[in-house]
Picture 1: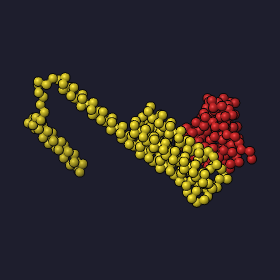
Picture 2: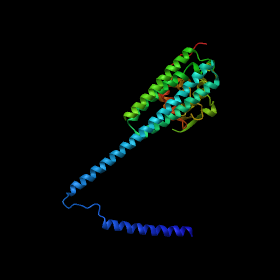
Picture 3: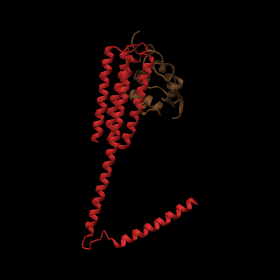
Picture 4: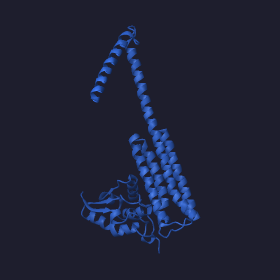
Length: 190
Length: 115
């Protein structure tokens, strides 16, 4: 019953709207074509408008993608900070346990998930231009990871973060942060 | 080539990998290479097949583990032979796959410390 009522109202509504539009169309001619206008000029005008709209759309799309990728790179900076935080916390506490080692590896795992996601998105949005940018970022990341997980920190005998180790880790952290922020600038320029 | 050998690292070895050498602690790259990888890789090469390695389900791959296992095998046997006979799977993280492949193609020679 209810459905029948709404269906009837919809049909009547469409009929009334059609009558109103018909009246306006016949009696209020907002646009009339001047017979003196050259048809080629008219086509030229429409083509120009069409191109402007298409270019604007492409520009808007590219800008939206870049903004999104820049946000993703910002999140990558935050995730990389978590890897350094494990070292910084252990340095403050004066001890480094196997739990800290697991935390460090898990933090790297999270970084790699984000990095993988960024790589996939970048190659989808900018297939050719993103390759050298991502290769450079990946190389910087592997250097950073190699410094933290390629040496003594992974030894089971490593139980304390020394001053030298902490200083080295801080330097490497600064380098990877700079590399990510440089990538961010490159994405801006794409 | 068909898959003749298979290693699921998280199941056949551990999900918390260690460092480079046995002397560095448990679940090292050296232990993985000598106890599992070397043997299965040789079998795959002898039969002309593929060794399938599943990298998923592990809490990250320390660079020293990757270097001590895949890097060392690449130094011993040559990157081309490894790439011909090993197929990796890493659904968890494409970066992990990139890292392992990079190590195989550019293995770093490390002198084993005298204990």
